[in-house]
Length: 182
Image (cartoon, rainbow, N blue to C red):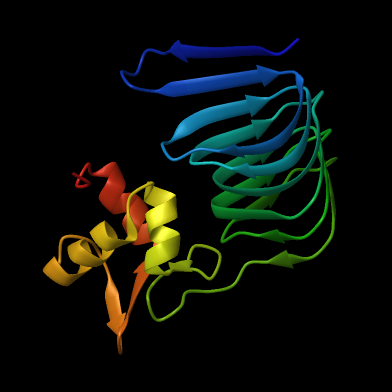
């Protein structure tokens, strides 16, 4: 049986989700949360905030997140916007992409690592994700017409290329976190 706890910590508004279960599927978070997996997980993880894979965890997944700490076993590709830390007895089998990587003595990394430099936009390649209006509408769970209207009026960070609008996901996430979405 899954045991999931969401607790308020000392810092007001901090969200913690501690999963000690066997799960499979897709976990996707729109808002930042401190997620800790202590059991088995198989599928896709798309997180905001920090993700911790506990010592007893076994994860077979494609992982996308901000700050990721791995002490358990992960098989799959990992993309982190900020940092990946692998600590003993942590083991990663798969390719990783992150601007910062820390592998402590005794931890294992078996795969390729891409720590590409800064681009013209000031974003590392792992942080730069361009969305179309339709993709952004699905991401924000709104109508495409609303996204296009916001872009036309300059209410949302957007770049116009010819007749198409493009949206940098990092800038959109910042815009959403500043509660500018109405």
